[in-house]
Amino acid sequence: MGKDNKLHIILLGKRNNGKSSLINRLTGQNVAIVSNIAGTTTDIVKRSFEIPDFASVIFIDTAGIDDHGEIGEKRVQKTQEAITQADIAILVISNNQFGEEEIELIEKCHELEIPFLIVHNKRDEHPLNQELHEQLKTTYHCPVIDFSCQQDSTTIILEALKELWKQENNAPKSLIGDLLSPGDIVLLITPIDAEAPAGRMILPQVQTIRDILDNHCTAITLQPEEITSFLSKTGITPRLAITDSQVFKKVAQLIPTEIPLTSFSIILARHKGDFNAYLQGTPHIENLQNGDRILMLESCSHHVSCEDIGRHKIPRWLMEYTGKQLVFDFITGLDSIKRPISDYAMVIQCGGCMITAKQLKNRLRPAINSKIPVSNYGMTIAYLHGIFNRAIEIFKK
Image 1 (cartoon, rainbow, N blue to C red):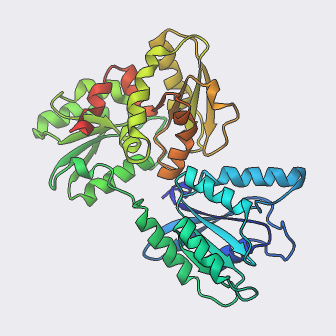
Image 2 (image 1 turned 60 degrees about the vertical axis):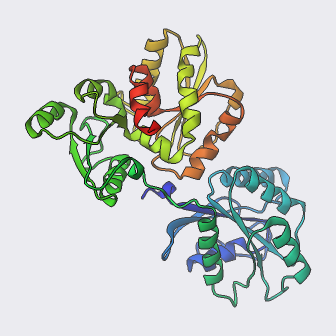
Image 3 (image 1 turned 180 degrees about the vertical axis):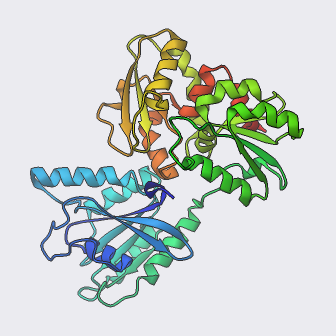
C-alpha cells in the first residue's frame, strides 16, 4: 500500500496540549519532539503505524492552532492544509480549556466530512470536568476521552478510532465486486512500455488483480497486441475487460463490443472520487475555449517522460480534439493549489491510487463547490477517443 493510501489520522489542538506526547504514546516511539515550551512542534510530522485488526495508518502531528506571529501564522496555515489530507481527526484539549479555536477546528472537520474524537489530555494534572464532558458529548455527538500519556493505555483511543471509522461506514469497498459473479473471467490489458515501471506493475493493476481474486474470479493479464490471438484461440468471452487508459482507443478496436470495456482509472474514479461529478463534468470538454486554463492533478511523484500520460499525452489530445490553445497547470501529490480555483475552466484528476478516498474528495471539493467541471484521466481519454459511453456503460447496470 502506498504511503499516502494509508488511513491518515491527524492530531489537532492548541500549543502545549500534548499532541506530540500523545502521538509518541500512540506509536510507542519518540517520533515527535516533546517539550513544556509552547510551540515546540513547528512543522507537520508524520508517522506510519499498524493498528492491529484495523488498518495501516499515518498519524499526523501538527503545530498549535493558536500559534502567532509571522512564522506562527504560516505554521497554522500548514495545519489547515493538512486537515484536508485527513481521514479522521483527534482534537486534543487539556486543562478543561475549550474555546473558539477548537470550535473552528470542529467546524472545519464538519465541512470536510471528517469524523473526529476529542481527547482531554493530561488528566493526571487536571481531570476532565464532568460538566464539560457532557457538554462536548451532547453538542458534538463524538467520543470524548479523558487521558493521561503518563498513566493510561492507548487501547481506549485506538478502540474509539476503530469504532468511529466503522460508524462512518468508510470501510474500503470492492473495486468491481458488484459487477462480478464468482467464476467470472476478467481481462486486464496492461501495456509494457516506457510508462511501465521496470520489473513490476503499477498499483491500480495490482489492486484490481487482488480485488478480482477476493471476489473468487479469474484475472487474465495480457498486452494489447495479444488480445486478438487470445480471444480467437481460447474462445473465452470475458465478463469485463479493463485497460490502461493510454491505449483505450487501440484496445476498444480489438475488444468485441459485446464485451464491456472500461479502464483502471475509471474504476478508481468510481471507487474513490465523486463519480457523478466526473460523469457530468467530462462532456464540458466541448465547451473549452482558447486560453482556458486546465488544472491537472497528479497524486503521486514520478519521473516525467515525453510519453507521460498526464503531462504530455492528455494535454496534446485535448488541444487536438478541441482545436483550441489551452494552458495547463500541474500539481503533484497533495501540494497546495497556488491559483484561485476560479481561474480554471476544468480540473482533471488522475486515478488517485496513491491517496485515500477522503483526500481525493477534499482535493476536488473546491472545484465542485465552485461549479467547475471535473474529470479524471480515464474518463477524459475515453471521451477524446469517442468511447466515453462504452467505458461507463457497465456502471449503469
